[in-house]
Amino acid sequence: MLIDELIINEDMPVLQAMQLLNEKEKKILFIAPELKLKAVLTDGDIRRHILRGGRLDAKVGEMANYNFLSLKAGQRSQANAFMIKHSIYALPLLDNDGVITDVIFFDESSVKVNKKLDLPVVIMAGGLGTRLYPYTKILPKPLIPVGEKPIIEHIIDHFKAFGIKDFKIIVNHKKNMIKAYFNELCKDYNVDFADEEVFLGTGGGLALLKDKVKGPFFLTNCDVLIEADYNDIYKFHQKNGNLITVVCALKHVTIPYGVFNLNSDGEIDSVTEKPTFNFLTNTGMYLVDGRIIEELEEGKAIGFPDIMESYRAKGFKVGVYPVSEDSWMDMGQLEELEAMRRQLENK
Image (tube, rainbow, N blue to C red; front, side, top):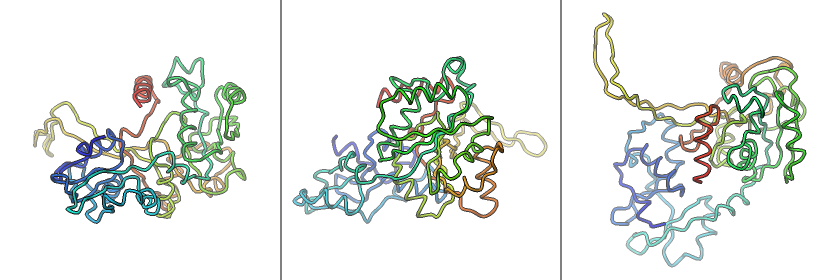
């Protein structure tokens, strides 16, 4: 990759920078007029901007890091140790005039090996999957193939990349097919099943895991894939003292019509052509404190969003970890399933 492909200017809008970060998949961009490094911008800088309520049309110069880390070009041999020490993925090498001569990227596999997560993952896999009919007339939703593997295997693989090997799967609809699939699968991780005899919603089934999950755990629906640093999600959760951290995707929607705004008399007050809206939406993936399971009423149907709201109303911290729209793949509906297939094939 050419360094020029990672160079941006301070006036670039945040949304455009997010898209570029996703496209280049290098987690860092540089503000460097004529390659003279002035500031760096990472996905973490953008995340903090969003959590402060920052706008997507703001200029990246407002949130970039002007106190960046770097090494001299002659210190290349020290780069890996330096990145490990400071927990960074990319390091610019500069000449004596501050001009970027090269960028060292840390080996992703080494990063993940050194950042293993020892947390269980709970996968909610008991739903009927009615939005994916007629596929789910034959197969349970977790076993619907996306490429060469069912969706649930893709989900597990994403967590395995961060060292996680303990999976709890709550099953109901066509549960024997799901169990049979995993019994026949050659796997290097542990899977335990919890049988939901009646439908208990996206949260009620967690009560089946009393005395089986004690500390913090990841919770995910069985139809979503999140491409993010799961270790960073965990650190964010711990640092902020959250009871629940919701992984939210930043959606950017443009209405392809002119929108009329009316006054109190029902007359046209203004017209906005093709307005855009930005909002954070629930992806269906969470990091959750184990006390949630212990305090759930057994056998009671409840959605996990209702659980979150009840704790938030009591004053507990429910935080948001934002990811880009492109980092979230959802196969909840047929057209989304096809989009997920295409995205995974491209990757």
